Image (cartoon, rainbow, N blue to C red):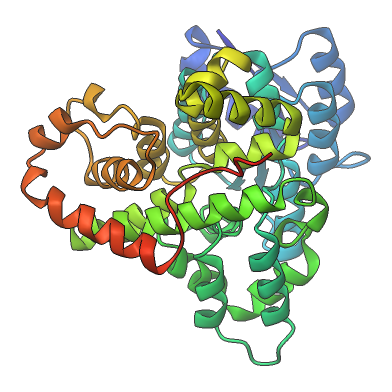
Length: 395
């Protein structure tokens, strides 16, 4: 059973949570605490898989509590419940947590989030991988793109379209914006998968404030050791996004683009936390001719595809994007694949020589007649931009 800790200093809210989730006791071991000290004592007795905390509490508030829980157990999923509408407080809450839910939160909405978090376990089977994912608060951006965004944000009157044009070129920046917009602070009726739409929802003023105040948008300390590799990865991600959006039908082009841009974010996590190990993986992959994910499982016990999908799922990105990234290398295992996973699989295989195209799958979904045209488009993209995917093979 998953162990879930709920923390709220309002007795009525705590009683409401206990009552609304009573039917889940056969599935989840739930503990309810009225303050942070009580919660930490319960956590020290036996760690929890998930913690759901109120934002505003005396002595130790929600973000402070979750930071302490993160230090004790990085793999614990941290969720904030808050009725505050202050953008600065929202950013602080998101920095400390994996997901941000508005308060009051309907029981069915909370159950859906908790169930989805529990389902993510299938993506990662090792405790080390879950610790990495749980520790992550931001991804390392491309040095050049991060600098361009900071420069743009410093210009008076910069527009949403100018900021969006920069962000759609970098996986780390795009993931951060989508994470913010898909938090419950914005209370959107549908998840946002389009990066330009996400930037538009935030607005130019909010984006400028975020870039100036949040280290997540341009932290050069994260990229000094692997700046070249991150830039190469960014170029591959941008090409994959552009090709995937051309392959996917019109209404789904935005989701295909986003999935293409984010499909290798697991490598960014490894660049940040395990630089020596990912260097070993890459050298072995080059020397043996094996795919990177095969060597990753031999060396690390997990691969970057599952790690990236897990992180994006924790951050509340749209299910369609997370599932497409998790399955794009093995789409033949899916009975009813989405157009997003289909376009991502084809685009990545055509741009990454180490990833074999599943031609049986391509035929099953009726995409074979278009394959020659997409190969040509891939060649054109590579000729006009950069060579096909090859991670810093000189390291």
